[in-house]
Length: 207
Image (cartoon, rainbow, N blue to C red; front, top):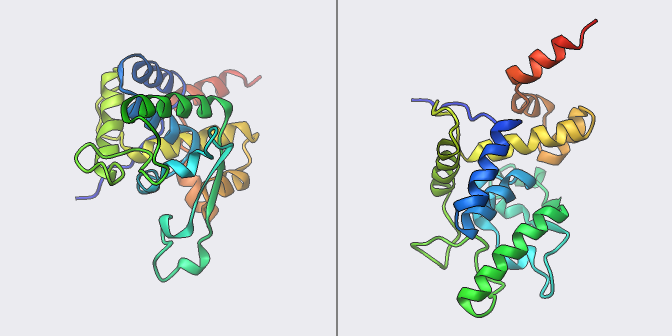
């Protein structure tokens, strides 16, 4: 059975999810959702992150870089075509990470920079698994009151990021492709769905 295509969070839907997770979720899960929305990293890439990737010993870094081996196809036969990926961190995103790391320090006493950024609760030496990230995104969407149509999942975060970049760039699809580290624009196009809200607003602006 083929997995349902994940859909992005747009407009009021994203605001509802963010309001929910900021209001009652624990610091790790809240930071994970916001980090995914603002960086576009895949679930497997989020799982691979270490504290050192976002923390320079004094403050949260202004960008996060993942080595090729942690990226999609970074260890396969096509690895020569894959480069490391660097994503800038906005001040808002850095603030969310600061708050989360402060929580980690309060609980753990200090930061082990080699520790996973988002630790698994069952295996603290490992990053949270892709399956659990998928569960968390679905839970955030359903608890925020979004329709339970089965199309929310970890890739929802990456697709939402794609829409943010596309709009912020003035609908520059090549820039969006580069931000997602896609090789083919056709892949990027599949990320950019049109919401009914956007469609209706565009039609109203005609004439």
